[in-house]
Every structure is written in structure tokens, then in C-alpha cells.
Image (tube, chains in turn yellow, red):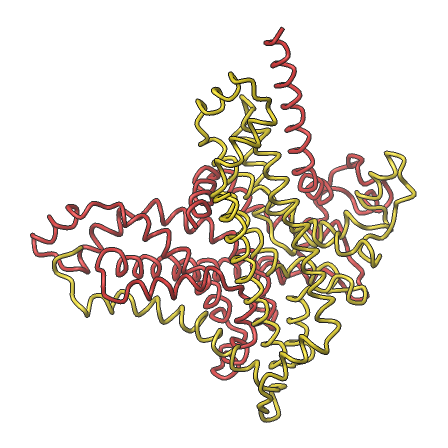
Length: 293
Length: 279
């Protein structure tokens, strides 16, 4: 602590950041909570409707529930690709002797590319006419029967818009998990090997439990990022065809800026926050319970 | 015997990693190849084939069709402005929280923590309404304010955890010489923060440079469009797209950040790892 600290100095340093943060983050959160109790199109006078927006959202709106189910699917695919994929690659990388730095760099590369560029890229990958990369690859391995327009087929579109998001950030999680795996003490693993443990046992009994704290962090990061995922589905399909790839976030955006239903959109955005908080709570509770067992 | 089996395992492992990395990076390589390929060649041939010829025409058309130069300039302004706020205000808050200290610091820390968890979508409608009320809609500020505001908590967190390890004796000597909190901030804390500043700027630049949602919501006029919005202009009416020119534009816009990343990837990777592992 500084000896000569003064109340004025604290305020001088603290007020500007608090001001920006208040205007950009705190005030809008409060405003959203308030707006969610009104019906308002931005032009006519606001009308107080109490909890009606929430009742409508949870009780009467099928599109909302469809969007929520899609969001869970989107989340599941992102988690499998990002955390599952990252764990596999990180484990392989730890065993490698050369080229680790190069591979880390290359693997992270998609994370620096904008979502708009990624949407362009994947539109071409999924394209049927002209034949895109995916359909061409299916043709080359003799699965040409599976060729289709992945983004216009109701049963494939959700997976198709989820994969780019998973692909984009898997490198980030790979790095974090890799750094954690490198910190597992080599003596622990060697002792287990001498006792006759197989590779698989070393992995499940030693490495995996050892990196559990990092597992919690990455699970929280990946889950909350996936729940707020918006850009790629919005750009690739805008929720279509029908509502087949509508997420809660894209539905909220449409309610706000296409239907100018500000009150209802605010209620949905409050739901997105609650969703994230519940997810974080669940992850912490689940992984802590395991620790005690 | 055992040695041999280990080697087989090792090389299989290497082949596996190689395949995965190729699959991960191939789409990007393909993007660059397509940007260099003549238009007819792209339309008529197998997408996996190598270009029949190389051309820079696509880049010429990309610059003719769109406003790439202006888009890049706008993105630079927004990235610079937001980074300036994130770094300056992040350092100030961390200095007040960690070095000066005050009674309500636990509460203030908690307030800033909210911004790490809360998704940006919650702010879109209120900010749109507020901006419309004060005439900030369709300005650089409309993008810079939320981009900086939502990145501020992580910046404060990183600066705080660094300031936490600066030994108090460092300040005491200066303090005995009569330096006040402002001079100590300028002469001791700020110079020591350089590495953390680099990390924070690198990581945040990725997200700011690529921001789509704030720009798409708050910016309407062509003159202010950043790169992500500018790229969308390449989708013509009726969904007709000049793909090779579009890919050329994409390449132009992703190359600066990719080059920075490839040159400075050590610092960036460290920043991402430390930010995440502690967060």
C-alpha cells in the first residue's frame, strides 16, 4: 500500500473506468430488466405490462422454445468440437517431440479470422452448386449419395452452422489444455507406468483428474461463449430455413431490430443472461461434486 | 523390442497430429488459393484442384467493387480507440484497486466481474435506444464504447494480477522521496506494465478488429463501416456473389491480423493462456 494515498487520488483513478463501464455495461443491464416489463415499439408510448413478456416467452411462444432447443444443440456440438477435440489434440501434442510451437500457432490460426470471413468460407464449403469442398470430398470417397445443400436442409442446417463456431476456437482450448497437461508432474506418470498402468489408465486416472481445475475454466468459457453465439448462424442462414437454425440470440436480435418489439427482445436478453448464469452454476456444482466423491 | 514399439507409437502420433493440423488449416489455404484463381477456373473445376493459373485480377475487382480502403481505415480507428480505453482505464482501475486500496474494493471488484460473465446481447437494445436519444447512433463512439466496456473487466483483472506481485518496497522508496500517487503511477507502475499492455492489446485487437454485432447494430452509413460490414457488401443483389473477388477481399482484410499473429504469436499465446487459466 502507498503511504500517501488520498480519497481524491482513488476517485481520480477509479471514476473514469467506472463511468465507461457503467454506461456500456451496468446501465444497459438495468435498462434491459426495466424494458422487459414494458411493451414498446420505439415510437408509440411505452405500455407497462408487468411480467407479460416473460409469460408470453415461456408459455405461449413456440418459436422461442424451438430456438432454445436449437441453442442446446448448438452448445453440445461446440462443446464436443472445442473441448473434446482440444483434449485429443493436446494429448497427442504432449507426446510429440518436435514442431510443437509451429503446430500450436497453426492450430490457433482460425481464431484470428473474422466471423464474416468464416461465414463466406463455410458457405462455399457447404455449397452444392457449384460443388463445394464438403460435397466434393464426399464424392471422392464414394459417398456421393450424401451430397446435399447442407444449409437449406432442415435436418442438417443446425449442425452446419454449429461446426464453424466449434472449429474457430478449438485451438484456444487446445492451448489451455495443453499448457495444463504439460504441468502434470512427470514423476506421477512414470510411477504409474512402473506399476503397470496402461496409457489409457495413465490418462484417465492421473492426467485427467490433475487438470480438473482447468477443465472447469475451459468448460465455463466454452459454454458461455456458445450460449452467446450469434454471428455465424446469423450470417449463414439468419435462423432459416424456417426456424431450423434459429438460436435464442438470433431470435432476440430479430425481435429487437426486425420487429422492433423492444420489450419482448429485452425479456429474451434477460433470459440469455440467466441461461449463462445457470450454466456456470451447473458446471461448478457438477465438477465440485466429483471432486468430493 | 519395447523401444521399437514406442517409436512406432511416436510416429503414428506424429502422422495423426499432422493430419489434424492439415484439416484445420486447409480451409484457410484454400481461401487464399481461390483468391488467386481466375474466375472461370473457380466456377468450372473441382474445388480441391490446384488453380490452373494464378492471377491478381480478383484483387483489382475487390478494390473496385467495395470500399476496402475506407473499411480498413475505420477498423483501424475503432481498434485504436477501443484499445486506448481498455489499456488506460484498465490500468487506472487496477491501480486504484491493487495499489491505492480503499474500503469498497471488494464491491467494486464484484461489479467488474459481472462484465466477464454477462453476454453482450443484453446491452444491444438499451444502447441502441440510448444512442438514439443522445445522437451517438452511427458514430465511431457507438462501436468503441461497448467494445471497450465489455473488455474492461478482463483488462483490469490482468493488470491487477500483475500489480499484485510488484513488491511494496518499490513504491516505498519513491514515496519517501515525496512522490504522490500520480507520479508513482506515471514513473513506476506504467513503465513496469509494458508487457501486460502488449498482451492485452494483442488479444483485444483480435476481437475488436473482427467485431460484427456492435457494428452491425449501431452503424448504418457506408462511410463508417468497418471491415466485417464492408465484406458483406460483396453479396450482390439477388444473392449473386463474385466469389473469387470476395475471397480476395477477405484475404486483404484477414492478412494484417494474421501477420501480426504469426510474428508475435508467442506473446499472444501466452496472453490467451494466462488470461484463460486464471479467469
